[in-house]
Image (cartoon, rainbow, N blue to C red; front, side, top):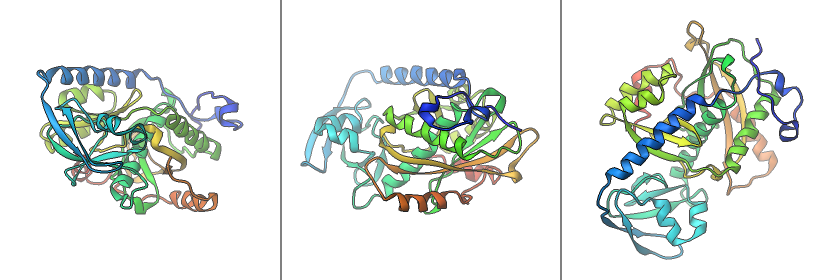
Length: 330
């Protein structure tokens, strides 16, 4: 049964007949979650009260330096602005005290040492996991903004990133069975990912209480079911991220901006029959991508694309719930 794809510009997608199929959702739900995110973000900033200073010892190029920043307000991104514009553009995340990965736009709590990590460093394993997780998060944003209400789309979750798997993942639920996306449809989703990258939007983090999280995701029964267990393992808090108007749950960290996403392909949609419920059909969306700073030959990238089409063996939505949500807690 076809699910209607929103009408898009042929010049943008250079694809015929895409409009006959699947995608585009009203933005009202995501806008409400984003509004709640903004209100809570403002409340937390105002709660800081008297501004206290902290010392941040930056370690790295062009030279080590000590910065005096504002506790609970200044972020690694603010530190990068003092060091140089290119460090704002290139840094994926921060490493505090040589051990703690930290979001670029997450306020610093105490004096610390600070390193800025990117995707071309000699030891990129931390940044790579952050990139894979961020790709899953951005895929969720694209999917939420691509399906019409008639599709009955709900985002479920995305598993812990595993670079060796060859693909990043986002699990979704549809209200219709037997969706088998065409090559043009997958290409359309891939282009939407690239368009999101080109906007260079900030990816923001916020810790909220479970009550507010439930309000944010009141229209998503799967998120609502996850929230109590996530909060119980995270001191009553739920970590949420926002890009544009899209808000989702993740332990993080994420990369600082969508502009760090380069070449990207949404390569497969696998039905997960063993997770299906009455009127709810699960699909595993998969893709592969490169950071914008990296370039490889098209032949090598084609090999990566082919590998990414194989069903990712990460934890499925129907597998033990407690274990699944534990992975989402930082």
